[in-house]
Image (cartoon, rainbow, N blue to C red; front, top):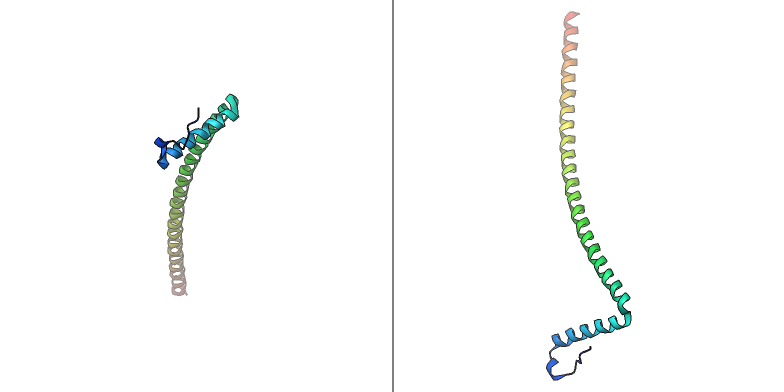
Amino acid sequence: MTITTNSYENIHQDYREAIEDHNKLVREGIELGPIGRSQRKTLRTTNKELRQHIQQLKAEHEKALSQIAIWEAEAAYYRRDNERLQRKIDRLKDDMDMDMDMDMDMEV
């Protein structure tokens, strides 16, 4: 059953839009028939599920990005720490070499 949009009671735009939407759905239902309506409902359900899946994937993506940022920060920290320790090793080797040179000079 369709509802007319020009009647006195339906002057307001909100009512008019609601009535037009209703009439559109009724016309689509008539055109599609029962199989078409069930397919449309199935598509609507599928779209809803896909939207939910997209939201879930976005959340997982954000979580992965934050983990990557943490790992990058930790890698930078350990890289700097490694460089610091390598300089310390080099300095200690140099000190050891100097001590050995001094010992050899004393023996001669």
